[in-house]
Each structure stands twice: as C-alpha cells, then as structure tokens.
Length: 128
Image (cartoon, rainbow, N blue to C red; front, side, top):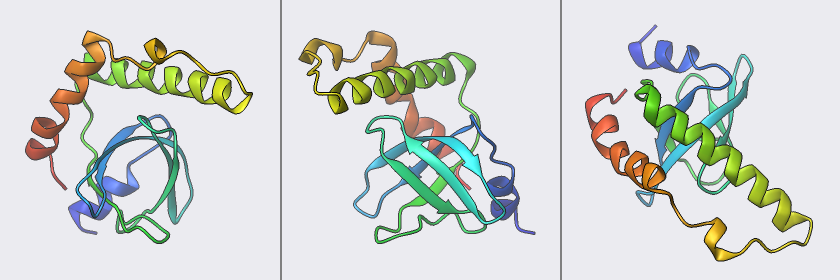
C-alpha cells in the first residue's frame, strides 16, 4: 500500500483535510463519514457535500478535485475550522428556512482569516 493510499485510508469522521479543485480552488473539508470505498465530506467554506474515492483521493462526479493533504492542522487552526463549519451549518439552515442572515454574519473573524492564510503553507509542507 502506498503512503498516499494509507494516508487516505486513515481519514475518519471529524478529520479535516485539504483538496484542490481543477481550477486551483482550495477546499478545506471535514470528513462526515467513510465507507470502504468513499470519503464523504463537507466543504467548510461553502457547506457543499463532496465524495472522494478512498483509494485515490479523487472526487467522485464531474469535477475531479483531488485530496492533497491529510496532515492534521495545529490544534488552534483545527478548532477555528471546526467553528467555521458550525457557523456555516447554522447560516445554511437559516438561509434554507427563508431567513436571510445579515452580511455581518458572513464576515471573517481575525482567527478565521488567520486560519485561512495558514492553509497554503501547511499543504505545501504536508502534501500526499
């Protein structure tokens, strides 16, 4: 088993990983569940659901995004991403129910901004 395959197999619910879409967009995702063949995840910044092949790390579907980093983020950065995901879920529920959260609810905090700026360096140092 290659290191890449092993790293992907070790992903579990609650882990956060990074992927890259074909257009270069950064994708910070939280694992929502795993099966023998699939990693189910939610993109933190958009709350979109994504499914990746558990062996290759390539997204299933029309847009072949690719998991490129599964190394854990520093605890403080991880905690910020978890909170961003919670906030995103609340805002998405509000939006779906017809309530329109004010734009101020979407504004990044200093900690969120810092966490997002840490992504590129983390991924570059921990590519799979």
